[in-house]
Amino acid sequence: MENPIFGDDNKHARWSYFKNITDAEEMMRVVRDEAFPFIKNLGGEAVKSAYARHMKDAMFLIANPGLLINVVNQIDSIPMEDRDTKGDLYEYMLSKLTTAGTNGQFRTPRHIIKMIVELMAPNAREVLCDPACGTAGFLVSVAEYLQELKDSDGNYILNAPGNREHFNKEMFHGFDFDATMLRIGSMNLMLHGIEDPKIEARDSLSQL
Image (cartoon, rainbow, N blue to C red; front, side, top):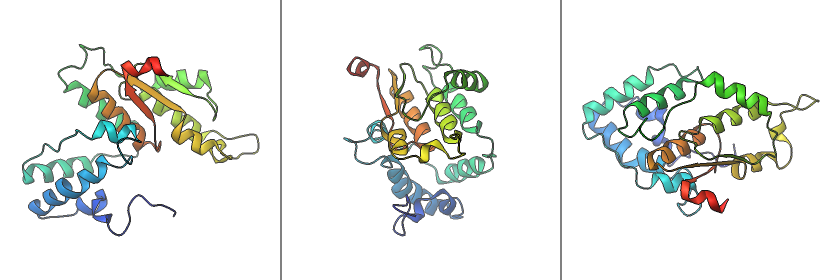
């Protein structure tokens, strides 16, 4: 594998590593001091990546080692084979934010999003914009649609020359006025394999 996310020097930042640490203080040290800073900078330098810009002010707020172990164990027990599990988690997070709902932040049901995307039938060279992206559910659904799309010869269209680079860097644009939504949306797209989505504050929309 070329340019792996985790090399020998940071493999301890992987979930599969630190979830198995039994000493609470050691898990806290690894997650707080190594894994969390690593996650914040997954998108590269802040000046080059929307993800890194939105994550730069993120803070690790779990102060109790015992609570951290409990949280890790509970997350690890969630079945992630269902692709909509992340969507359910984001919806739960929204319900806990004091601004959710009052600012119009509601998650569109998965099947509705999927239907809209299939009706749009985007291709690999589209430039897509969601002016009120929230957690980026529509953009993620488009990404999943394209990742499964094949040409007439049965080849995945994203494997055609230039398509993967366009997919990772130029295709996805999302805007929102809430910093928390920008952070969650950027993270959501990163989790779904989009390396550098353009997720920006709403006041940047006029510059597109």
